[in-house]
Image (cartoon, rainbow, N blue to C red):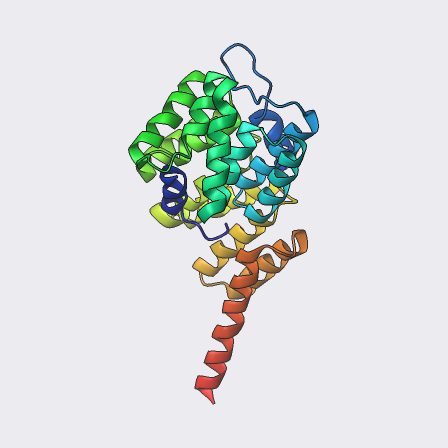
Length: 266
């Protein structure tokens, strides 16, 4: 995973697809059916597709690609609330503030769900308030894959996250990103490396074209002391997306560490 631990990922949100990404998007960005999934109000179906892809990348910690797709969606529909909310979470400083303000303004005549989603990026919010907002959205739209994903990662403790993640994959077994979250829980919290590897392998199976799946497996190997396989999988991640900063930085660190060891031995 682009090195954002589960706890950091939760803070990120509290403070402010086939079996690849496209499969996740079809489930996550489904059209509103009764009160099961949240409406994504936009004047452009192409913008909706781009935003869905971008949010799929976001769920997979592929932020560079998420930014590209969401930016493209907003060129087609500058008042697309869902896309504006995620752009506010992808940016910082004045850009973040501007996207948040646009999200609030655009949500004024949208659905109740979209208004709630826009409230997530209110800078005055504390973590507990946003956690409650995700819980409310999840209650309103239990069949939304995107809403369900962020409900999971916004739970207060690793144990709560893990329990919610188990429920999630029962409903959305083809949504790859959740297996990444489960795998990190096994690796970082339970130190169960066999189950961690099993879930990282499932993540790659369901998201074979996503760089983060290989980056995550690389981190697994690095954690377990297998630098050779770590390098292999970081390289595979860059073959999928050459600008994936997590893998670029990890390979550079491995190279630097090797140089230090060589220098120390001479």
